[in-house]
Image 1 (cartoon, helix red, strand yellow):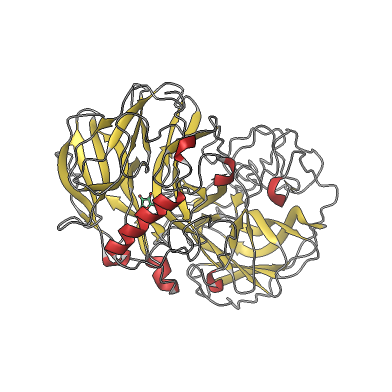
Image 2: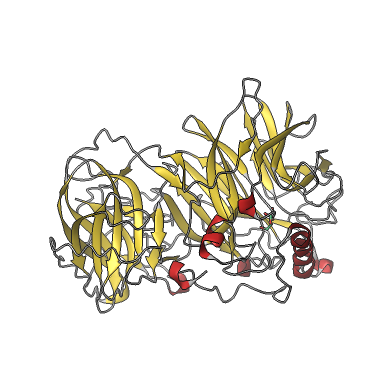
Length: 586
Ligand code: FUB
């Protein structure tokens, strides 16, 4: 990714296939996939089946000032801070299990509930493994009650720009949508992915990046992490993980935002499992039916549509209940299995092959049963030139009364001039159903904005800085469950949040920043700033030292009093030398 968009080159990712040539059209791309699979497969003899853009805003508002933001003695948690990412959030304490960053699962003792008392140090959080807790469980804010806020926001296409994302597996957990994605490595020629990110939202526009939720380094049986599949059962969250096209394993988490851990240490499904010897043993999709029965769908390969498989899972979700996989006969099946259920009907969707009339569309079957009796119904999403005649991968959810399809496109890489067909990005569109339950074919959109925002983002609750509607130039760094934060901030970069509720009036923005020596300015802008427009400045503050590059402390920016719903941007200027964890309004 060009530096202007700030993606770093993740140095450790490419293990194999580095030297494969660049494939730029369909047939060669298919060859590429096969080669990538072949050359990244691990020694099959060791297989084990377990258990049977824009420039500086230049809005130098003179209106406000920095606040103290000292950090010493601030309440930090213990617990190992892995990966050198910063350790703790000063003053925002939470206890309990390492909830994923920003999901309000930690119960937390003295967690900041007033929303305006962050950074007071004192009551250090407890909790052995509660590193960081950037997700400070601030709920509700001090000051005035939430307004009757009607958002006027639209999801962006693609929905994430800080990294390339692909193969979205969207799932609704509680009142949030979680999207588990492959992470395309910058400039990858093939499929060199080695970790996964999860993104969550309760409004479909502001998407929280939960950081790296699992990495191939923790999976002894896997090298390249292709499309993941996610589902939940009995309070645990499962991620089914393919090792390119050679096998599927599983990881488990207590929080949907991770971190995920492999309980087996070996693949769950390999080609030695009866009837699982498909050309590409990958693209798992898990589905838990209303009766609690879990199913794992998978498969891929271009030979007559007979490579889709399903196998039942045991209650533990980490072992197989069937003695052999069942074939799901399809039309033009290629890859990207997905299962969802609506009004008692089972929908098995997939990406079709490149034969005439198909062309990597998302197509689907319907049945009254999860394992058999499927009828081909046609395309639900046609592919488009934005995908350069290359692969597609989708998932479908029902959320807050609407239906959505998630898929990937090549819009961002084309805008960036990256010219790699395998730097993909996830997009969202609304889906509709006919009265008989079939899905009218949708055209893939290239619009900059797609679905409507469902609700406002409460500015008086702590907002993770990486809960982004859009960004320019920054990176999101950190491991799930630790301090995931906005990092590598340079002058001209910005982060944007859609339709933030300022309630009856906010007069300051309190940001959790970490800076060794200080440096840089945060300009607070509203309206017209998403996408890099100038917006309207309502305040700014200079970043001072917090006592350490990993020491987060509150920095208060005084604002021109502002109320109601506004797009909110934090634009960085000067010589930024800080990272940003979260913020709230007061
Ligand atoms: O991302 C790698 C592979 O590309 C996936 O496993 C396929 O579904 C295709 O999207």
